[in-house]
Length: 211
Image (cartoon, rainbow, N blue to C red; front, top):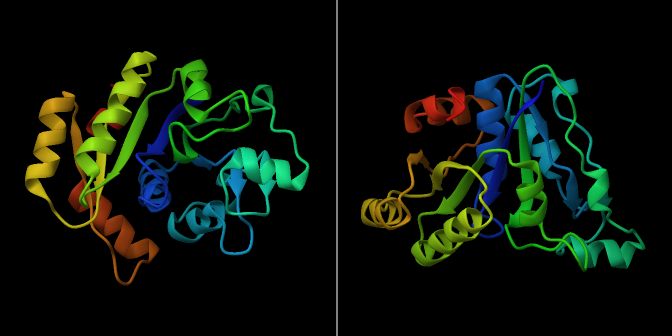
């Protein structure tokens, strides 16, 4: 049976796609982003295929692909697509599946359903990706509260960016949440530098142990 882990963020552009690529590679698993908004530039699945080191068949195709880089609900409306939550059923795979949401928890899929509603149905453990920049304490603690209000299991927080020790500690203490580690901004960003940074920066025993 598939063992899934959901990767979400406190906001859009926090770096969760790069983190997802690193995690999928470390676990030698599968990656799936069921809903992709924006096709003009490299898609998130293409980024993961390039950075994770996974074989091509381990990056699963999206269920929905919309042209405009907007919230999925609006991008779908522009394209004349109806996103149906029922079609986002979990695939059955022989290994770990890293599932990436779009943006943050409250991003709408359609006019009735948000991503967090799907996560609550799946009841898979979540890793919350958070920037280390200014504003992260508020955004991260609000996201933690939203997950717990819906009884969604939270494995911990993955910080992304330059070290901000006090902010990271404050989130861990107020949120009563595990710090999984920190992924710095990488230049150059390659599959090799990403793997090295993941190994050096993260304690993934809670992930491997399914806690």
